[in-house]
Image (cartoon, rainbow over all chains, first blue to last red; front, side, top):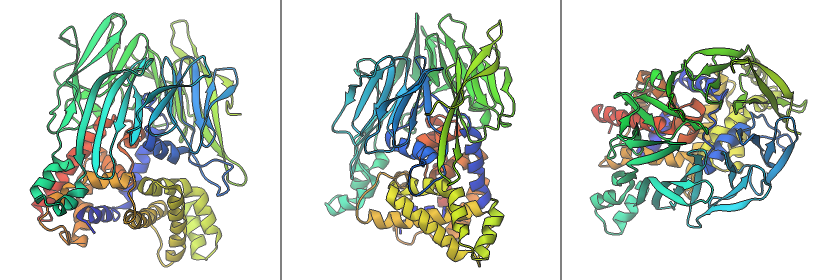
Length: 407
Length: 185
């Protein structure tokens, strides 16, 4: 048994309280899911597979969680395991848009252009919002696996992994969301041997040092120096500041026409949290600070130049709009936060949203949940609510539109 | 049904104990198994073995926390199955990736075999974990105990992936430093 395996075994003996601590933390955050990230292909199966793995018609009977969904283009898209990806417009019916074949799930995301999904590990298909026609958006037959995430209203970041049993090679690129054309490489780990082939390399005649040199441990990485963001007439630039030799990711400053938008001690974490037509919301934090206070700060760049920063004690995990973002607090209240003042207020009290997921596009709120049949099988539900606003555009209530959009 | 009542059923050898365990924890246990094995059939088997493991060990054992007792059984069973499977072929499981991240443990050792005394290591790890700041601890255990992917951890905890990567990198570095300092590495 290797040292690593011994270490992983030793971890099995950790005190129960620490494991419960992880469960508790996940439960508290799960209530409202980050909407920007669409999950990664292999990981999608893990994330969503673990969350909504079981469906009612499986013979082995199951427990389950909630259904994953995303809002964009006036639609709500969600996926039912073993069935496919559905599209729903508030007040209308759900339509099955993509049927899942030979899989539980397809990774998918939606942006202003439409729906993107990965039916295998090598290609992405796209369906515009008002169409039923899927077309091939991206393909690379050399891939081992493929992940994607939103990068703007219309661009995507693709994580391309070309690894095999012995060689590791991965890179991230930004592509145009309409054409699939590559815009830039944001990160790359060039081809190198995995560390577990050191022994094999030694057998091939390499010294231990030479084998180590060829292994994962010493590989150099590429991180983009600059990433550009366009917001109507504004051009923002993220410039890398992290130590490239040490970290395998980039932290960035944010500038506009050479002017710093963040304080000296602030840094931009990776890609924007979410992007709307008239604003980009960046997640920021204090440089290299890791306590909670550094986690949930946001810089909101608006097209009209009225930028603001907000601080929140909770991760703002559901989408909202330029003025209000939504999340679930520790008491399971549905909250909104004013993006101009950082003030939070309760929109819905004591909703008992414990294990539910929340999605919102700023106009509608979708709350997914599950229930059990008498036989213990799972029934998934997604309720649709319309957010009601007062004369000043402030959210005041939720109006039920559809108790369950899943037919 | 409460965990206490389910455990009572094990003690009176009522087979409904397994049914109730399955109803309550199957998905949770499946997630742990699947993170390691990345195979539906193997994960199902691990979870079923967990029920049998619980049935065979309770009594005499009376778990303090039933949920974590089960999860430890699942993790152990799945890790054993993973080792058996990887002797035959490679998987893209999160456990495999986690092992790769911890590769420094192997690379810096003159002799890999028997470098770690397992009991001493368990004590060291318990202390190391207890001394970690809570956010680091949660992320570290989510990765190396539950074998959640980086993306999954970021997703579940509301962090950015870079935050998770950064925290894991720093925690690993601290771990390696302390292992060296203690003469364990």
